[in-house]
Length: 601
Image (cartoon, rainbow, N blue to C red; front, side, top):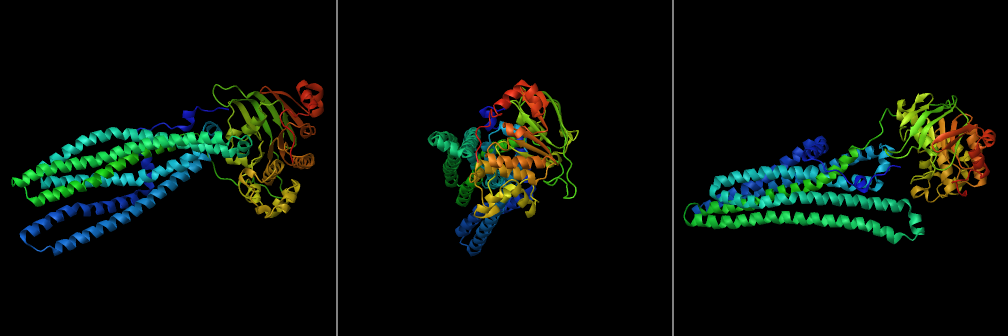
């Protein structure tokens, strides 16, 4: 199966600034009025701070002239309180909006990930995809609102402060801007380094998630193999890479913050020196110098906001690039919603579906060998058809092509005489019941697993299928019956129980076409015999396709398709093939147990 190199599987291409801003606006746009309100409140708070140095100048001038200052002090107090209230409410609005942006991004990603084509899921690492929903979207919180508002308020208040400072004294403003410009150039050189470090840190977090997903996906195997330390070292290596790049990002952010402080401090010293000389020479009053120095310190906040916004943007751009990569992955086309259960009533049985492969070829990726080479066979509606052959001949791939998990690279796959690519996808899958080779059971209760493919199933239908699949005894001994949790991936159940649950789940759907991929490989002889009877009964009203390695599963099939080297070698009944096909005769002689292993209960 096609796999990608590590960089392709876990990394993300950096987006151009314009693309990043466009993607960012896409997340912010539904909340633009809330962001505008937060920006307005932030500007109101900033305006209060902007007026305080002027009020201080007026206060100093009033004291110098011997006037009263009570009114000015009251006005300054009211100004400070209003500024604080506006900033606090604005901060709440922005934080709430940021959470809404993250929620919307996660909902969009989750929906898209569940619609991905299997070829994309095969290529990517599941843990890395999950990290894009969790850690990457978290970075949107800051960049989508705080960075936008910080940049806007920082720019507006910076310009306003510069205008007022120019009004106070143009000479001192020139000194201030000269110092700030020198340090600003140095700060601009640091910005890309923060973005690079943040992107690599996020990629490492994805690798860490991938490593953990790998371990928990085979937890018993890891423990049984004594591989805990090796696997821990693998995950810790990714954690160390994330730490290293995170520290590197923090280092450059610290340099950026220090440059901000350095610019203000140097500007203060320069203004103090030049301004003191101008006060001493009588070119400006001391109140103007005091107000100018207050504005200089006031500049720290808007400059800090701009620096912080730039830093958040660099980190957010890395996250946006990784999220945008998911948006470029191929997804299955969505069509009108259908019920998980095909249209049928108890009085009108569903018509069995027919299946035909016409010269079908298939490979998992460019440059890989063909799994199918001009495969051609026909299955009429109803009855049982078994697929046998050595491992790797494409038996399970037949089912994957019928379900349209993959698209044929040549020829046509038809269900009911209609090319599967012409079927609405949900309609096609609604008529199919599918039992996978490893019979997966999801975390949750037994009831949730049984009705997973048929959420509208009634209690009577559930009881009926439990009896047919011999699960009624299991339900009786479970502490909470159908509502008993089955554990992660059904770890509280035996392999045979998981297979019977998977079969029951498919039967509850009342499909027109039932696909069974080694569905009884883990059953003991008694339960296998019972399930064979159920399958035989089902085949009277449903088309049943079976991939099997056991002779007992295929001997009474209506037809058997023998696959070898990606081609159809022979088609016939058991008796016909034993007499006419050498490969099938060899498989039959060894009980077809070429890869099934010993059955388990």
